[in-house]
Amino acid sequence: MGSPSGLATVQGRQPLFSFGLISDVQYADIPDGRSFHGVPRYYRHSILVLQRAVKEWNALQKHKFVMNFGDIVDGNCPKDQSLNAVKKVVDEFARFRGPVYHMIGNHCLYNLPRSKLLPILEIQSIDDGCAYYDFSPVPEYRFVVLDAFDISAVGWPKDHPRTLEALKFLRERNPNKDKNSPRGLVGLERRFLMFNGGIGKEQMEWLDRVLQDAMKLKQKVVVCCHVPLDPGATDYEALLWNYDEVMDVIHRYNCVKVCLGGHNHRDGYSIDSHGVHHRVFEAALECPPGRNAYGNVDVYDDQISLVGIDRIESIDMQF
Image 1 (spheres, rainbow, N blue to C red):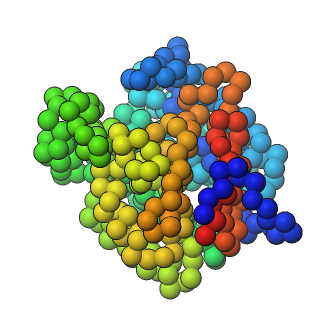
Image 2: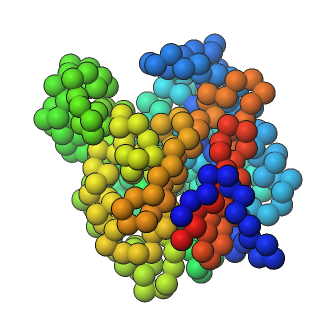
């Protein structure tokens, strides 16, 4: 079950480990703007949110690592500034006194190709420039980081097979000339937009192998993906193209307890039909000056407790 208050008691128990998280910084050295829906965006302030987060994470002296849920630089960043902007944000993350794990988002790929982006984020590619990987901070847990833009119309060369596959996929499902427009699409069809992406065959097979291994080792698994994996936790327009296929793999095993994501810019939470918790995070980008959006997470054997800061709500996810 999930407790929205984030106040479930864990008296007398120390967590197995703790970590920090933040999503959708989308920094750019440009004046404030608005989203397609008119939501204010504070491009220069967002890096200050990150700076305050890193300062707190270091002061707590308990986090084993930090997770960045993607989109560190905004697509509106002038392209002659993209490289320096990405490096500037990565340098702020590097001020954390411990490991930082990054995942790529669509705005990252609007700014830099994968060939430049992955080395800066220190993501070791398993498969032809893809950005999925896993790690175990303690023997009892494994984190699986997915590449939500494995099949995507952005980030790969224009003639790359993954680009061509993505464009064909969108042509068949979105009749609009502007493939970022959901006009005329109904319900879950509204996810078939160019700023989303999909998980390819090789990554799906890798995910299956990793979960099999986690089962053998009796590990609990946290799946991290920039684009959300459950319609109950996000707007349909910010849902992974083939979320259903990914969740079919996840549901084969009972080791995955929580799926975490960003991309939608608003807090979201659901528990799916198999009891997996899904939590989506508020964007640092949309914090007005002086406001914050990041989190501190305590991980126990039977629950994961998020202490949200300011605009991110706290929650206890029990399993």
